[in-house]
Amino acid sequence: TFNVSLGGLAVSFDEPEDTRRLVTSLLLTRNQSVALHVELPDTGQIVEGIGAVRWVSVAPTWAYRQRLDAGIELTTMVPADMLKWQQFVDHIARSDGWDTIAS
Image (cartoon, rainbow, N blue to C red; front, top):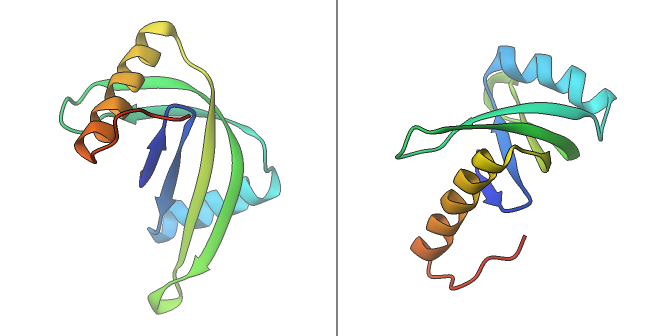
């Protein structure tokens, strides 16, 4: 994960096996629903939900590898996990000097 907001997250994969599998599935079905299982850094808490793939980018990297980046909008999350997610995003925003968060 390299970017988060209240409304979603962006993820990046550059391991050969993961990328090959994900490029095939995500590029063919943009806007597909994906199950999310995210371990929050520092606390180790797990949040789960459903998201929709909104954008995908594939770029070559070194040694014939590819990197896959994808933006995922959160569409469904149980209230308890949504509260954990909001607290996590709020913590990041405050750590970076933001007073408020826009989704």
